[in-house]
Length: 429
Image 1 (cartoon, one colour):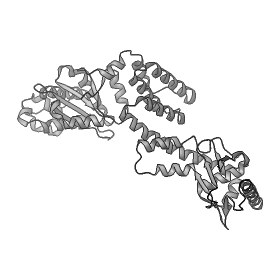
Image 2 (cartoon, rainbow, N blue to C red):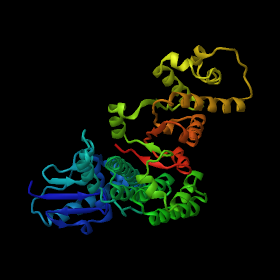
Image 3 (spheres, helix red, strand yellow):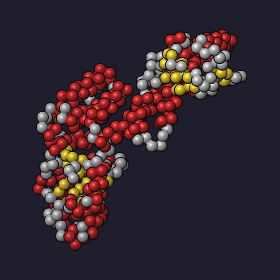
Image 4 (cartoon, helix red, strand yellow):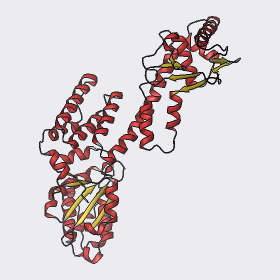
């Protein structure tokens, strides 16, 4: 009996193969549905199946219909196999697959692969290939609402698993800078959720990375059309700003190859690791980690001041203009040890202006003799006031012996805003 092989495919168009012969069309929809249901659940209550497939019938009628479909199903298998053993066995309570058949079920193989502790690139590619389409694609039973409900949740479950596989592949391909594969993955993800504006943004940026402004514009227009047609909304302001970048013919050259004094450099993790191992090549390095705490204003700036106070000798910092420390004290009380006279507070807006200029002056002071590199780690978490200071610093840094770099684990709106005014450069070792 073990020579009798059954292949049950439920990802994509459903298919049942028996000893190499496709018998899908020989089974009624109800019989096929029962076989899919039992195969997916390993073992199912006979009462539950009777209710699931004939929920509007009486108990006796439902049980009769179940017995008839089991007889009909086994008759089809027996036409190819002289043995009397049925494909589905049952006891007093349950239905289950006959273990004497060699049954290969694609969703079982998929789930087993997915549980692997080491989902490397090879494993992820295999998982992606196993997902031929949505669960029991195109299959439904018009008078079995409970079955169709089960079908809906199973489809959603496997779709979420597949999207997770795609996200993991995307992470790997981004590290490899494999733009063609990134684009393919993003397009596939859009097939699942055509209303996800963030996917359009990522896709636009990948085309810009390749220098393909034409396709970037196609995706932008598609995004605008879909959001308008389906949700009756316009894209976010940050997305609309991408149109300016797409139409900038010099954008790609600047983005990929420029490393001028007005650039802000985006670091990947391996870039950051290399830089920290070779800090002596880059002058004084001050790395400040942005913290994801809402409504904590000036957090990055206060942390930068901590780094400066910890890094430079106190005698050296004491020589900076004393008024600088008066203003900086407003966001970091460690500045108190450098204050030489009393001061008074002014309006909030005036204080912010003075703070920005005083911190700029302090940075100018510490960079006058040796180049300094400021790294904003995880800039997606930076607070609004500190981000405004970063922009202020970028506008002013041509007169400073200063470089600014950052890391980000996503394409935050802060990056889009920076790109409106400054070149976004790659790290060059």
